Image (cartoon, rainbow, N blue to C red; front, side, top):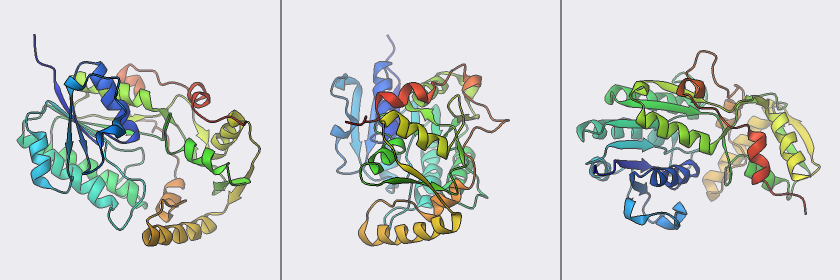
Length: 312
């Protein structure tokens, strides 16, 4: 009997990472969960799974010796590392561009079969938002250094413990309104986290996906205003939906980023996120998608009621 394939998961303790690790263990892979120093394996929430097929390694992705050592002996590598906003300790270029470049080089030298790189819809080296620009640069660098790569670009990923709907749900606890940046007209195609996981496992097994890029979105498009209205309806709460002009949003973003840098608090919104909201976050018409993988994404209307809190 062949030994189980060894999969290295960078970003294993994040929202998508935890789901990926759990699914890989169910599928019989040997998983090496990479996490930051002091992060702790308890964050993986995998007590019910087989620890014999799971290893933990802690270290810094800035340490080339550490990354090189982790890659040795791997069959597959999944890179899920990403940040939503910059801090004095982390910036988009280092995390989204420099690390994929270094990781892909080490993966090639280690003889890794496949690299699954998780990017984002809107990744573009010419984008005005630094987030999207760094994602685009990371894709280019990884492609240049590793021939067996597959890139997945999800839209907003939702599910229990997500940072999108849960964040706005929490805001309804202390705010009488929800802001609609730019009027709330930006279109999104939210995708269920387990569908993203299914796509990851599928491309690991399908050699035809090598060298390809897939954009992953749910079956429906919604404006930001529609998503907030849906959130409130499911929660059974009444809140005003207040349009916020772009210029006001940029000002709020500047103030929020300053407070983040001073006090290391998560920002309400950043100027970079305002720039991102100026463009729709949906699967491009000519992009490869779930359909090309033979997968059908789940409607978010089936998922949201299962985890959003209801009015007492």
